[in-house]
Length: 294
Ligand SMILES: [Mn+2]
Image 1: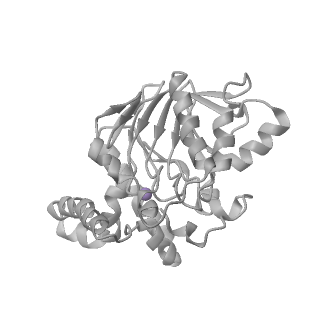
Image 2: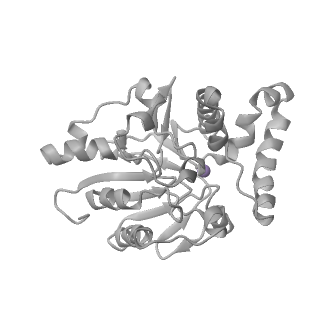
């Protein structure tokens, strides 16, 4: 239970790409996780509810409801909750800067950690077209870059009105497996550049379903991963340390020692970052479409 004395208490919890409303969503595991972690602040970093999937057929089992209830319960108990919409829950982008029963909706924002470091919190889909056409845009320059960001937003708005699916960078990159590492690399580059523009010390994003924590020069790149395949989250401890939690791994060690994970955690190695799904002991999601929901 979240209220248990042995629940891990962190300063901030970052979650993204839960995709409630799809069969691939690992809601039960997420509920498990939310019972074991409490946070002063919770950031939902996009693609929490899959509005695109829900349009083509209602899928909303009890466990998905329970996840929402669990989060709301944490808000009632005093957690601050900030919802940063992604491409799959972009309908919430019509409600930016609004407050609903203690929940704030923000397109992107700066989070100041306990150690004074500032992190840009953003889902990341804003850069899909830019990442896909990086080479051309580099040649065409700054105006084209800005145009691509604009087109990306509006193209998907039109696609939504036409009832088409979202064109997703990560789903596309996964189809082109040979290039997937390149796309992920480019995604990281653009997000880091954006954080630099915002004069932050790092970025915390989601979208590509690929959890990571690594320093790129002086910039800290963090990705929350997802709750479709890898079941990962980012937490900020009370000293400002950021950590990627891989729930399956954490649960095993947590059950053995019943100690807070901070003392046992280790940095994520680059090798691990390249193949989180392959290393995950979690069962593969049953829905065949689960791989195409980023
Ligand atoms: Mn996304």
